[in-house]
Amino acid sequence: MINEISILKGIHPGLVLDRKLKERKMRKRSFALSIDEYPQTISAITKAKRGINTSLALKLEHALGLEEGYFMTLQVFYDIKEEKRKQRKNTPPDFSLIRRGLFWDTDINKIDWYAKRRAVIERILERGNDLEKNEIKRYYGDAVFQKVVDNLKTQHA
Image (cartoon, rainbow, N blue to C red):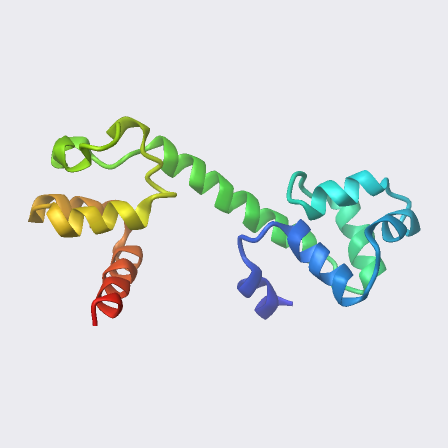
């Protein structure tokens, strides 16, 4: 379970449930009824519109022959990922180190810094000075920054 969990870490457990049901050629409605759940509940979970609670996780795991804690572990990792995303979204880079003119075509206060990280890093690499590059590298971390740099190198090679 641990190897599979580390691969699926951060993915909504409902998407994993949907895949498991498809692998077994099980219909969501009949599966839901077989575990005494509302079909709408299973449908909302498989569309990532609802999370999985402990009671439901145990039912799902038992019905699918999975190890106890499988879906709750996925749910916790998903919740952690979402919380980190919210926290990052609320804390932009240090604007005192970045010229607003670099983002002339948008309101710098409305940029989704996490969702648009690739575009932001590319813009800073293209037009930014060393101070701005260092701030963006600090904000996103070395791994994310380097990945964008490497992608740019392979595109231009």
